[in-house]
Image 1 (spheres, helix red, strand yellow):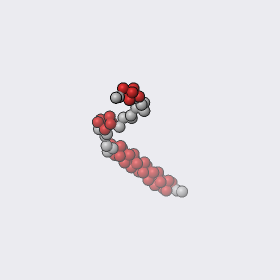
Image 2 (image 1 turned 60 degrees about the vertical axis):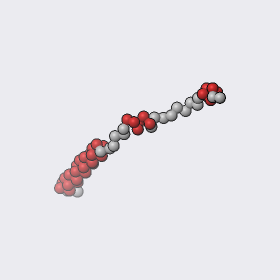
Image 3 (image 1 turned 90 degrees about the horizontal axis):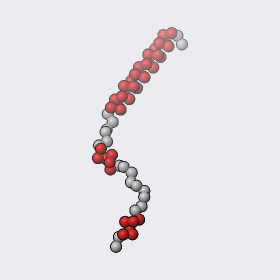
Image 4 (image 1 turned 45 degrees about the vertical axis):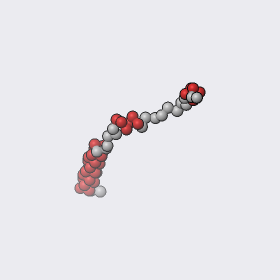
Length: 58
């Protein structure tokens, strides 16, 4: 490859990387924030079974 072809390849690579970074930043900024109420609802449930409540039931 000649010097001019290397320069063209380098410029195209640079433009591609810059576009990639810009689109990634735009994508990151446009992600939806999960409301706090939804985060509370999504908390895991305790796997422990409460046998004491069953024993005290009539």
